[in-house]
Amino acid sequence: MRFSRLLLPVVAGLCLVAQTSPNAPPKPPVDAAPSVSGPDGVTVPLEIMAPPLIAPDRVVIQVGDVKITAGQLSQILEGYSDSQKVFVNGPGRQQFIDQVVRLMVLAEEGRRRKLTETDIYKNQVWYSATGLLANQTDTDIRLKVHGDEALLRAYYEVHKAEYEQVQASHILIRMQGSGISVAPGQKDLTEEEALAKAQEVRKKIIEGADFAALARVDSDDMGSSAKGGDLGFLRHGQTVPSFEDALFALEVGQLSQPVKTQFGYHLIKIVDRKPTKTFEELRPELEKAVENEASRKFLAELKAKSKIVIDPEFSEPAKALVGVK
Image (cartoon, rainbow, N blue to C red):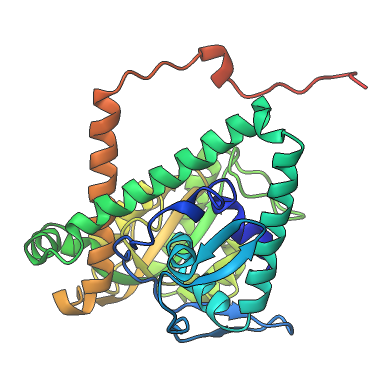
């Protein structure tokens, strides 16, 4: 883990906050199951570790005349994920301190060289500060709805069907134009030929052929064919719309008609169905969903009220320059 990356969001404001009050903002909702990668490359879960009990106004780092208190560093760390905080407050403590000192020393030298007067510095400081403020605003929007029981229960009632899970298997017959490559030695079927083959395979299953055996031989989905077409348990939003519509309309044991997607024609069979979890079981997911929805709606309202003008030429993707050396 490289702390130069962790510190990027706060580089621009580090020396600025050195003179501010250490009043910490509200804590955002905690991420689930933080982890960290050790030197052997193994990722392990870690418990959230509390930082040392140091008075917020105590100066903990000083470089030249610039002093940083424990409270100010705590505010800076509020912009980090829980897994990053775990590392900073634990095995990466000294590495973090070294990085802060490095930034402050280099920043002081940059001021001596008058780099703060350059346009590139001013523009990057503006963008960094804008990003920080935008992130804090988004967190504040989410905090306004965090833990609102009435909102959570209303969202659950409206969306609980979306949390239903079904275990499905499928056989994919690829057609021309599909994003899936043609297997070596196989014909690139037209849409009509792919549909005819799917109907032929379906007829075999109806007459008693084993679905899994046919999937291993005929399915062009290499990720599931070796498992007899098994896709595991799926929820709403995990597949393309036409596949999802057919998937959740089937009963356990039922076989679909050929279903067309951009990949080809699918034969879908439902193996099992899990009922929607209770409100309490889904609470963590509901909290996240309600916060995401509040953030999206608020942003849409802000954009609708704002004057936004984008140069159409600037918004076009850059074109490759042929023959330029």
